[in-house]
Length: 227
Length: 281
Image (cartoon, rainbow over all chains, first blue to last red; front, side, top):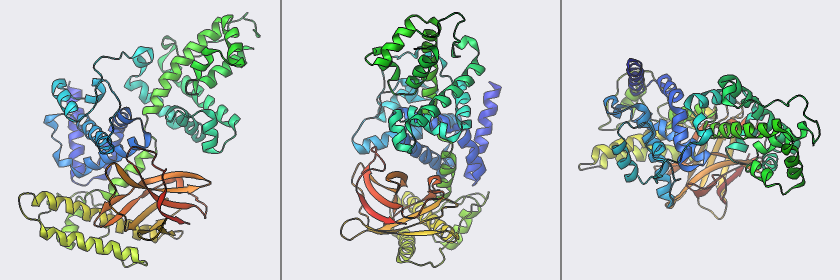
């Protein structure tokens, strides 16, 4: 608990520094919270470019309204999550559309009071799932720690491998579509996406060990080479 | 089919949308060959399940990861259009009369120019006129909402001043490129885009654009080699539309590229739609 209070004090100090005009403090808060803000935005609208703009608008709101943040009323993470959610929902309202159906825990983010958070979410027009969807085996592994490890590994990939993999997984493009988008031969796309996937898989296996059952299964001795 | 071929198919399926489902469906010669191999190869069958699991985990992490370049774009965006703070806020109160503006404590001064130096082009004069209109408008607010309206007007002034500052800075780059934007059809809106291929900073300013209807917004883009890339959403204030910021994809941009502004749905494809403004570098 004392660790949490210390972290909250650091963040409150950074927000005060933002209010005083510190761009370095804003950058520090960006580094701390961008993952959660981006994740909140993309879970609600699935549009990556819109999510990026929501991130920009959220940190602009933090800069412009830093004096309005009250640490005793809630965490900065919850405040930023609310701003990001509202920015996303506003876009859908203006377009006459509805955001994605999301589980309650996603819509309310880090809010401590779930009842109040539910009321705010409903008032804001967010569509909520009424039941726990159940994470499944991949969801159980999708912890913050896991995402941090993969995020760092993704940033360290060669740029062309990262680009290909992001197009495949974020925009759900086929290999042929990626080749057309980037002007690469199809064989090059296949090679680069496979390499990117295998590199990240190695990182997962190293980080979480054999019990995570993510490492490649070796071919057993004695198995025929051609079936 | 040998192990290497089977595993290559599995790895390709892992990065294709619905790839595993198509393989399992077995309605292609490759899928049928793979199914036959997996039936007799426990290690490759186990590998398929592990690959399916790890690909799902990685897919979710990739989908939720913000791009590394978003950091610089976001910080530059805030620097460009955010309210002045610290020493810059105090400097503003000395040079532009904005009654009711809150006093902010001193802090790190933000790089900012107050009052754009005279520059070429009618559009820069339009920007200066917009600033004058915004400042003059602060004196007309009355009633209980005066403070809020003044604060909103103050933010507008800040944004326009930031555009002026960026314009001067980018224009001073030795490799600054100027692109005249003209109405794509008929007459009406005009604009200018300035960018530097080395710093990748971009300023877009347009006049004459009508306010977008509900659910729509103006977005600027660049088209090269037949592919459009997003630059950003145009902000409107005091009669002009503008966007400033870095665009890394413009690094080393070849001459002959097309720049444009289109009116698009808020949640639609940001680079589609017929242009309302267009110009070539």
